[in-house]
Amino acid sequence: MTLPALPQPLRPRALRPGDLVVVASLSGPLHAVDEPALEQAVVVLERMGFRVRRAPLLAGRRQRWWSAARPAEIAEELNALLRDPEVRAITAHDGGHTALGYLDLIDFEAITADPKPILGFSDISLLHLVLYARTGLVGFHTDLATPGLGGHWQRATAARQAELEGLYSTLLTSTEPIGALPATPTWECWRAGRTEGRLIGGVINRIVLNQATPYALPLEWFDGAVLFWEEAGGLAAHVWSYLQVLRHAGILDRISGMVVGIPDGIDGLDSPHASPTLRQIVLDVLGDRDIPVLGNVEFGHAGPNLPMPVGIRVALDAQQRTLSLLEPAVHPLTLTGEPGT
Image (tube, rainbow, N blue to C red; front, top):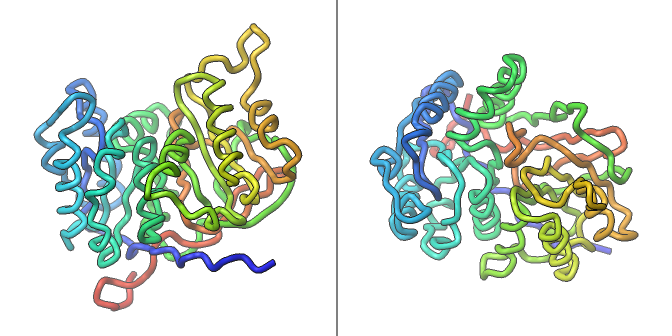
């Protein structure tokens, strides 16, 4: 059987020392109590060798309801950053519940003309899926600035911080594949097997919501893919239901492997009232689909996050508890076609 051709990933140009990274409110607002964490995130990015600037909505501490501003205002600022040649990467300050409000206002042509890394997860994982679907842009599913770089990272050991900093720097600047991500004892083989495929995923509720919009990924793009997902909050029954939606959509019949993040704050998991484990929920919905499943991998709201670049080919061996990035997320050319460094 010949599978349909997948689009070539749209890789941004590799970042260089001194390049400008802008921290932006792409969803939720900045609260005063989180200012120290944001300042620490800036320190981390500067330590990687980048210049850092706050986008205007973030600098002005704007807020409207649960968002940093009206969706149209957030889209206007995002589009301005996408069109600005000085801006070489955009990292989300935090997640939230706003991206669905401005998907139809994004300047996709600006992304195609000058692709640049957009970093973040949670609500930002919706952006990764939409931009990948519309342009092929590699999605940098990484920690958010304030709760991640300035929060979870600061509570990790010094060795773990250094490891993550090296991973993120390599992801953004190196045109060589990262290879095997650093495994920890939390990783569990939930179903043995090996596979290679494109990495696609994010927060599971955002995957489901996106597939209900005009920005859904074509089902054929899931053929042979390695689906990664995590969830935070809600109920165990919600996770089961989201997986059932993916089953009904035919996605679970198309993927070749699955990687599940560490759950965070989900009610009804491992409770004393005969509730299931996350592993049991996953295997219940998968049924007899014989695909490798690797569980409890460090990405998602439990943080800190390993990088999971959307659209990049990976190798998964659940029995050996390995996940390897087989391709770089960036390319070595400048916008004018001159060799990068």
